[in-house]
Every structure is written in C-alpha cells, then in structure tokens.
Image 1 (cartoon, rainbow, N blue to C red):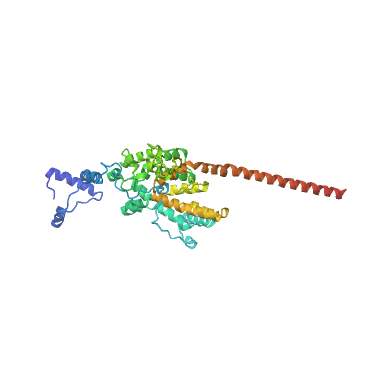
Image 2 (cartoon, one colour):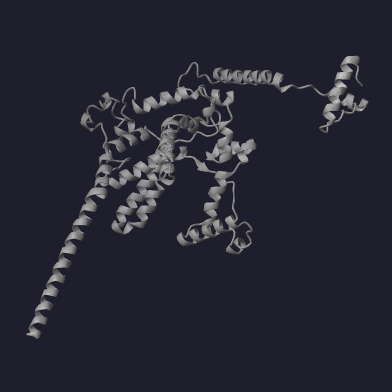
Length: 432
C-alpha cells in the first residue's frame, strides 16, 4: 500500500501509530469499482474554481445588460429607460412602506391548551398574553400572525419564497438576512428585484424609524446611528433592494434615482400643467391661440383649483386630495371617517365628498392632461387650509375648551356659594 521508500514508509507508519491512539485508522484501499466510479467524477476545488465561475457569471450578466441597452434603443432616445422593469416598482409612499409577510397562518390556542404547557416560564408568558389580549379585546390570531410573519426564516434558504416576497414588498427576518448577505452583480447593475423612487422610500424609512422610536426605548447613541444609517443606506436598500454590505459599490439605478429626486425638489423649469389652463384654446404661456383670439379672452386661459376637476373648495377636499396623493388611490381612511361623522354634514355635502373621493382616485391613475402635476400644485397652494385646521385643532379648540370649563366652574362656584350663604342665613334665623 505504501511505496514511498523505506524511510518515508517508516515515518508514515509512525504517524499512523500516533494517530491510532486517538482513534484514527488506516483507510482501506479502494476497490476497482470505486476507482472506476471516482474516475468518472469531475474534480472540483472551490478555492480554484470559484473565481472562474464568478467571472463567467459576471461576464454573462454584463453581456445581457449591454445587449438590452442596444435592443431597447435607450442610447438613441433618452426618454427610454436603459433598465429592465423590476419585480416591484410601486409608486407612492404607501406602496414604498414595507409590509409583513402573509404566508404564515397561526392557529390560535385556547386557554385549555395553556394548562398543558410544561415549561413554567412559557406558561406564565402565555397566561399574561391571554390576559392582556382579553383585557383590551385584541385579535390574538392577528398579533401572533404578525410576530410569526416577521420572525419567519423561510426566505433565508428558499429563493422562491424570497422572490415572491420581493414582488409583494413583504419583509421578514429571513429576507432581511438574505438581502444583507447577498451582493451580486445582477442586483447592482440592473436593479431587477426592486426599483422605486427615492423620495417615497425616504419618507417610508422616516416613518418606520419614527414608529420604532415611539414603540421601543432606544438609547441616544443607537438612535443617532439608526437615523444616520437608516436615512442613507437604508433608503437605498428600500428603493433598490441593494445590500449595505456591497458598499462602496453603488447600484446603477441610483444615478437615475438621484436625477429624478433633484427634478422633484428643484425642477429645471416650471411648466404649467394642461389641467390648470384651457389647453385646447391657449398655449403653454397662457396666451390665446390665434384661431380663438376673437372669441376667447386671454384672462380666461387659467383655471382655478376650486374648479373641476380639482374642486378644492374647503379643507376637507384638501385632506381628501392629500390622502389620494399619498396612497396613489382612493382616500379610504378619510371616507370611513366622513361616514362616522356624517351627521355634521348635509346629504348633499356627503354625496359631493363621496363623488370627489371616487373622481380623485380615477383621475390620478389615468393622469390625463397632466392631472397629477396640477393636482400636486393645487395641494401645495391650498396647504394653508391644512395649517389653519391644525391651528384650530391644537390651539383654538383647547383654548375654547379651557375657557368654557373655567366659565362653567365659575358659575358652579357662584351657585354653591350662594346656596350655602342662603342656607347659613336660614340656620341663623332659626337659632336666634
């Protein structure tokens, strides 16, 4: 079995004797059948083959990327995006907010099942959980579904589940770990998983961090890093599913995202949207077209935000408009709230608000004649109504409530003092 010479064989045998004391044995020689099977296998050495495999895969990825550039025509027409459509490309702040996975379904146990719990710590935790949920009338199954959904680790080892969660913008602990430790060229160069605007992602991340601060006691040092990292690397991750572990590399789509963000904050020029002037009779500079000079006055080119299709006549219409813009759909929350306090309004006003909610949701999706741009303009110019409502709710109403309470208290004190004074005089009269 050994054929390395007398000296080498002796050294090897001495090592074998030493290793035998620890339980090691000499490996038996392979049979001809085993040697034949082994000869058909392709030898692999990950340390040697991994760089070549990675280079091969990256070459295919880059080739596919440049092939799409030429096929899409974006190099000749700058209005065409050079990136493929992502699995998730939601619009608006609500769409950018992370959601919990809906795959986990928790079957709620009963109180009888708690008594069979063997572990005493778990027994008291479960009893406390049932007591609290019964006290405040929470849906126990909903709470446990949320906890189990976030704690799920399925997406860490199952790519199909992770891809499904990416398409639905759902998150769990398993997906967060998988995304953090995944840094592929495909995600960096094409943003194929997720591609949303930076501004809604920034607002969504701000809301998430704010909710975490309001619900958990976070130290000041950790809070500083949470805000700093969350509003920088966290926004990039929430927009493009790009892992912070890939830094200092940046995704290709970040360039177009920053350009879009700059145009949203500081536009290159202010174009009057067609929805804010009579575009059929007037030009973009609010001058009347030549064929309508005799029949249409130039002063009538512009439209007001209180006219259709915007009809922002009061503060409630502005609130409906803001929720429609945030949700990029129907203002459901304001609609439910109006139905609850509908007794304050007439039937005609309630019907007009219902029609307004439906029309806003339809028009913002269709976006005909620059409706969305004009919609945002009107919200901006009517935002003072929201400021006035905020001042009334936070300053004027508390002041009036305190003033009314003081007046009622003063009147009650006067009545009590007068009653006691009269009662005292009657007592003195009877005694004397």
